[in-house]
Amino acid sequence: MCMSGRTTGILSTGKVKHRNTRYLGTEETTNGGKQIIPPKKRFKEFEITKPVRYGGITVLFDLFTQYGLIELLHGLIPRRGLPVGEVFASLAINHIIDRETLNQFSKWYQDTALEELTGITPDKLNSTNLGAVMKTCGKIGPVGIVDVCIELFNKIKHLEAESSTLIYDITSTYFYSTKLPKARLGYNRDDNSLPQINIGLVATKNKGLPILFRTYEGNITDVRTVEQLIL
Image (cartoon, rainbow, N blue to C red):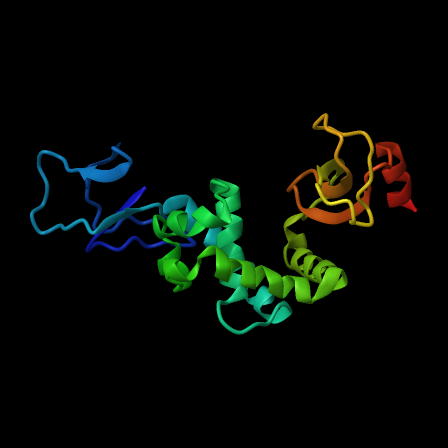
């Protein structure tokens, strides 16, 4: 947690240097609201504007920027309006840290340092605008989505510098709709009787980099998915 005021935090790619360090106090939640309890002794010239989550948020965003993933998304999924790269980077960071719903995302976003990093104000990241960005991905189709995944992997595959074991896992997601082509009744991990789709993922053991995913009919067995994967 970082308290933003007149002192600016600096993220360095080298050795971390502390500049203008001040103890601002502790954050407490009272009646659903957050407030800063200042220390008994503090510098009078220091003014707290609002608390924001900074550390982990900034590190993750810096990784997206450092490896060129944000700019890559701009090129692969062009659109007018909100920038795709910054929006998806923010959604990914949210998924990693807190996993808020789209309806709660804007509220979560405004309590982080992401506005400073992306230049996007929280009011623009309502569920309607986020849905519009996601629909842009739908327009490029399944083949286009696969191409995006391949390009993203090519950007970071150098991180897996040594030989690695591949790990394969399969899960399933169920639907209330009965018109999806691959949605079938089968072994259900959630013990319900709804049609489902199986999803297989291959990742590297060392870094956990995803290198392949595939969807299967809901009634296919786990062993059979491996056979199809090899073929």
